[in-house]
Length: 604
Image (cartoon, rainbow, N blue to C red; front, side, top):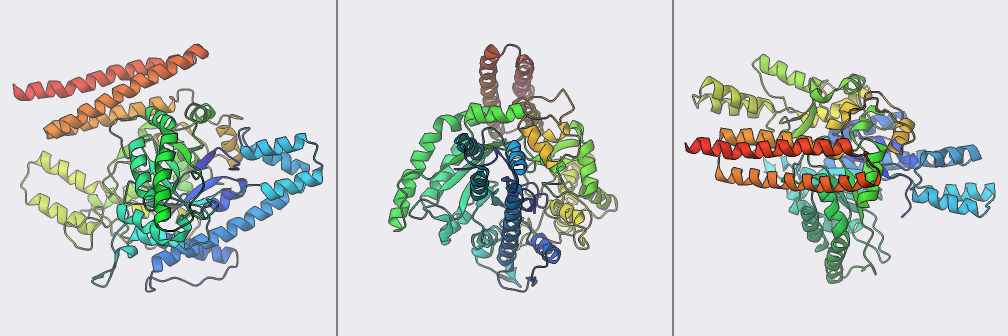
């Protein structure tokens, strides 16, 4: 498998990587487009059609299957434009020896493409042959897409509910399946059996006689057990998972799916130790399914990648993940929000991200999905929200309704950030005649939800100077905690050089190791869960907290053993990490003891 780089750019928000493939795929960098917002995709398709003199015919909401058609049309346009840019880049790069040298200097020494090139040049190839070989073999970055499996709203025509294949995530999958792309769909936010089963409808997800896949499935997971369950589920349908993308449960951007106290290091270790078991188990199920369906059966297991992302910020950490856990690539997310050559962020948001410190980046409850969500304090979408609350009109107008999933008051579903939902919920709250303290607590819980499905896409409209009359100008942004250590707008070359250790763009010297940062975030999360338990204690919640603490403790012991062994090789290298582990170990003991203390007080 030939690749140029050992990193990829994950999906970020809804609009921040909406056109990243046009910016980075010619350099061999993989990136991911979110398929949540077909309205945004259609606006950008119209904009790019005008920019490149392409034919454009609007796909309106009155058309049958408009969502899937919009998505296919946008992806086809990105496919064509990206391939044109790639051909131009190949031609210009291979014109001179200097151009070829500059290109290969950008790649890491571990690049399989660079290794092949260096092997060939040892054999004394002349310049003409070198140019031809580079031009023929230069890899293009993959144009991947992301579907959040939870964002699968049912749709209606007037009062008639459409069949499940017209649900939002189903339509997005169909839009990708019918596009020209030969790439991957990254399925995130957990298992959706009905959506997973829908993959069976499309031949492109099945291997041909040579084991090739036109379209691949990637699962974003946070633990090995979940990966195995989902991989087996899909294999029984004849669908191979080509990549398991392991993301830190809490040290990431966007939605944060906390594990039951399992830390990233031990999770990666489990994948490393069980990789062959995962391949063999899933392959066997795949073969049986393909034989039953009378489809071509690959002679050997299909290629499988294990990748990791979430909080990585230095070349040392990048290489550590590659070497220690044998991962195939590492995802770099939040730092790329400061690289205009790679992502699409409006200038005001860029300035806020440059200035952001630890205290500005927090794990919030603003997402209407009910999942913890990393956010930036005083983002303009939240400012809009607070203004509405102060005006006595809490809730968003909800113009797009992508997460209108709550059915408490409406069979078609309402978004919990919407004005309609919050009006009904606050009316219920008022009727309870609670004390002021209780009322204020529940009022805040209801009104803190923000219209992220609009806010996470608006930045792209502002950056491209497009109309925001429907959306408004408010921007939600979802950087991970790692953003605090990146403090300047950066060129693509600078960021690549930083990733591979050729330069350093982090000015601060107090950045903790990514594993230590994740542990700190998990301890903070644990503390908040204990406070929730104290407010309304139950036996079930206490057991969950005990399990969570146990797994955190096991993770700390794993890290102590790991970093002591590294310290023996390079003395003093991880002294500070080991000191921080000791501090957090004591903190965990203190937090765990508070649960039992509280129980004793309750009984007395």
